[in-house]
Image (cartoon, rainbow, N blue to C red; front, side):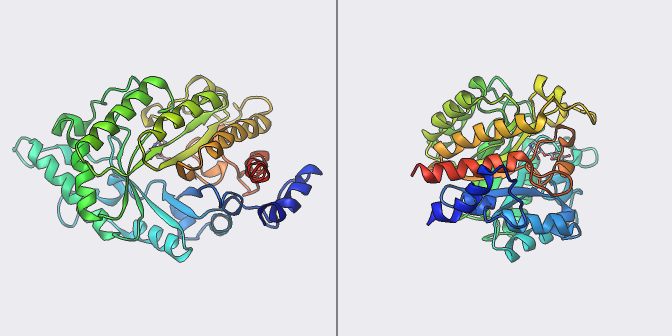
Length: 366
Ligand code: 9MR
């Protein structure tokens, strides 16, 4: 059945024809249906369907969505106090996912970035205390996770808590609460929605020191019966990193944690600057400039995507979801690095064909 369904697409590819998203039988969600869900991070214009082409492409290609920005603390909860929440855009996002029968992800509850200063400051002349910050964290998590209980199926509970060397990042959360802020965040999220998948999410965790840090952190949480139930590997890649070998080693090591793995923020930076600095730290968001992509970027991008998906497919039993961090190059935080499968005119690039081809090869090998 599977090989029959894709034989037309395979024939077209063999003839050198480009699979067209509008009329090809192969879409990302159908091609990978036996392996993992395919997700995409949405911006507001997409989930409100103001961007009609974008919304149509999302519905055609993906069966899971993540909110690129509208569920960050700063967006949802900009001010202190009971009236400090702003749920409008987040509500629209969840409605879009539900209307289209998608697996809906929440991103992110506890992060060092995009969290307003008031969260860590005392009111009036009162000095801030651990208890007050914990209370604010609990209120936020119970309110937000509780509002979407049963509808948002997976949350990035704690985001980017580690340094490159695997030690704990001295984030405002760490400084205000101490290292148990991570356990507390998972406990509050579980209290709010016992059925939601609760993920720890971070970038560059293929690299050995950080990989070891993640594994140690998760094992410690598990030993304390903290309700962590998923691992998110962002996978902000460039044209050579992570290599297939490094990714394979990391996914093999993560499998030992016995948690479902989600690739949460996949993109491949093809800018020249992006080949020197792979970091996804928001403070280092390489302000690339237009026109600095490497030579033969489309082909190199397709090759790296093929390499990454070969490894994801090898580990498909442990991977439940692969999410791209944006729909088209024009939408991306790394737009000058042309990092995604669709160009600014919503057209599939050679990297799209390369990704579909990996699914077909895996199907034929079955
Ligand atoms: O793509 C997001 C960009 O639009 C925002 O300006 C930025 C700051 O909120 O966050 C970007 O997404 C980040 C994600 O939330 C966490 N991992 C790293 C991503 C890229 O910086």
